[in-house]
Length: 154
Image (cartoon, helix red, strand yellow):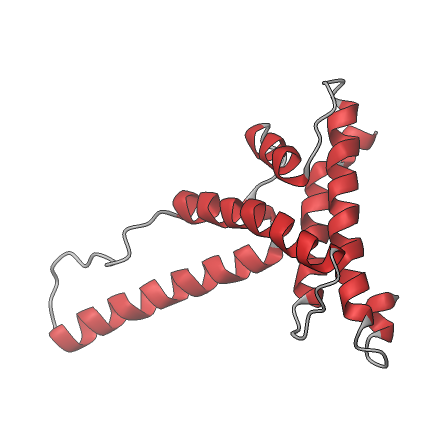
């Protein structure tokens, strides 16, 4: 609701974004609690633990999926242009040598490093004069949904 009302009061974006990160950190804590392991404090350590346990995957985040689709489309376009304009049957190789697994690992690592920084910046009164709250909401929603798959709650 804060995000919606930020249309009228822009300062609500800061509070809305703080709640998004707080909810994600809380969800991580609850998921860890379900595993009956010693409580882990700190967003970064909880996030790292969840990644190592395999609870969080970049492929389960909608924006990562959209970017993966764009990378694939771009590679296909480049291969087409290579074959069409160079009229060659040789082996085309994508100059971007990263695999999707490497992209996924880098993406999750970026989130793990970025979330504590972003959370702390809004928690300590640094107003945000840029958008991005909707994206933070989407990413955290996808991450929380991965923490609690249906079969776990059954």
